[in-house]
Length: 292
Image 1 (tube, helix red, strand yellow):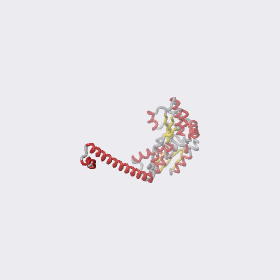
Image 2: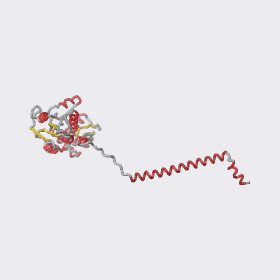
Image 3: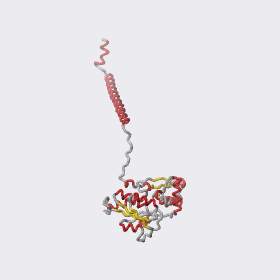
Image 4: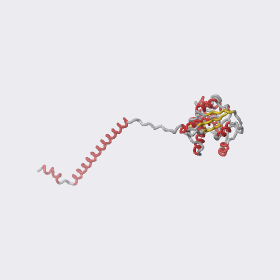
């Protein structure tokens, strides 16, 4: 009789009993799901960890450029530490000497050749020949790109240029014609001879050693605020200073631009961290015999 009373709640459960039973079922079901999820998470995490442990390390894929012309441009800015620290400003140089042809003239040469190709004046691998009158750097850039694009190159230059420029051109497979220095109005001047060969003259102006106004600079006059005259002595002194204090082996054009940068900083009275950017046109490896 007593046991029947104890079991009566099972046969006729009250509201509280039903509520407790329902809660118990829900809690048990929730715990079962949670335990399963935790076990699955641990198992998947362990598998992922094992996969990562055995997977090869991925490195950034190197950028693949399209031949030697793909190396032209996108040169970095380099801080000239010694000058910047001494003057209290930031003097930055666009390192154009890192172009494959060794100077800023690579940009000019590539553009001239690409324009000629688009206009139908040049066609690769058809025996076309490019004539260039130059004192060196543009000719080296022309010769470099000409070989890469399937052209021959004839370079006409004064016979008093640095011998290392001649050797560089010959190594690049260019035909080199050396003529006596002459006035631009002389028919024997190297640019005039190149024109007779069928090629436009240089489209870039060297930073030093020229005593006339060329058409490209004349067109730029409206956006030029000022100009500085740099002597050979100043350029040579700057080039040697940079080697000793910065480890930068730069050419005459680069040295002239940095001397001009110092003069501009002093003229403007800058000393509070202002930034000036110039062009490091060339390295010193073409100036051993003439500049160094």
